[in-house]
Image 1: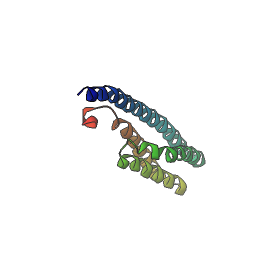
Image 2 (image 1 turned 120 degrees about the horizontal axis):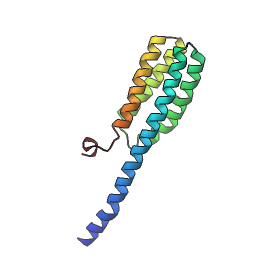
Image 3 (image 1 turned 120 degrees about the vertical axis):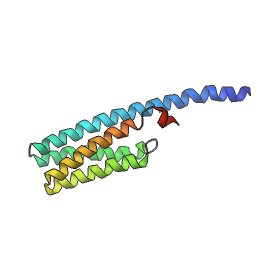
Image 4 (image 1 turned 60 degrees about the vertical axis):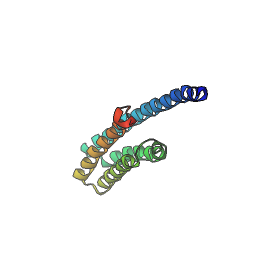
Length: 127
């Protein structure tokens, strides 16, 4: 019995600290990526599709590097949604379709926000 109590006393702080650190990291990435996507969208609204493409390529490249790490603790469907909207926005910029670009930009920003909120420490996420 004593060994179980010691094991719980050791593992509980480790699990909590990991949970809080992944929460804060996901929140940081979500905010950072949303700002970068908004910047790309602002370029697109201004009609500078090349600058928008460069800005989006930069954030999409960062996302591709971080996605495998995020998939360790975030639901794959959530990260797949973000990836889908990155690709949709890139297609919109490539073909010059402003409505498609803006639709995917809005959905991408929302998906990035959901990525953070669904990783929050809430009862529904814990249970």
